[in-house]
Image 1 (cartoon, rainbow, N blue to C red):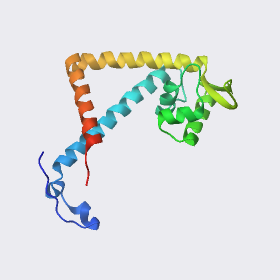
Image 2 (spheres, rainbow, N blue to C red):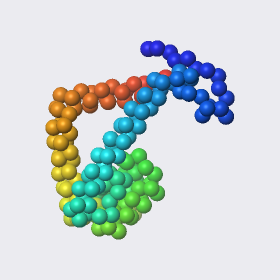
Image 3 (cartoon, rainbow, N blue to C red):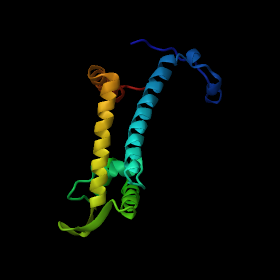
Image 4 (cartoon, one colour):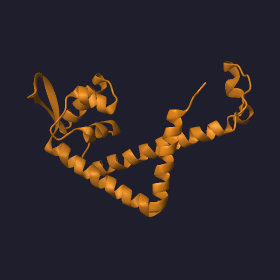
Length: 172
């Protein structure tokens, strides 16, 4: 793997230096790839949100949809949802409140722990999940028709390899 030379530049003047002068052209490309991956993810979720809105499911955001999608049919405690979504209990509680206010979930006593509450999807929440699942299938079919199944499989493999590269990177 090539080493990129770095010039000594003070932090105050870093913004004045051309990336190529720093030897960061490759780092810039890698950053653009990472940003493109984030943009693809945001566009994917936005398409699902849009499909839900078209079917009358309003008040959903990427964060609330993600939480609703992780919610087991039998329900889960907020702390378990927080762990599964890698959010704080407080942030998860706010998302649950949004979903509850919009009728997608309800809180019921946890039969296994009298002090705790379970968050369960309502009929509306389950129906929204079905619409979201249909939207994901449509997106998958469209993606495969545009890229082709082989290219899509290759892209998936490349992204998996890139994730491993980032996880295994030894940074100075």
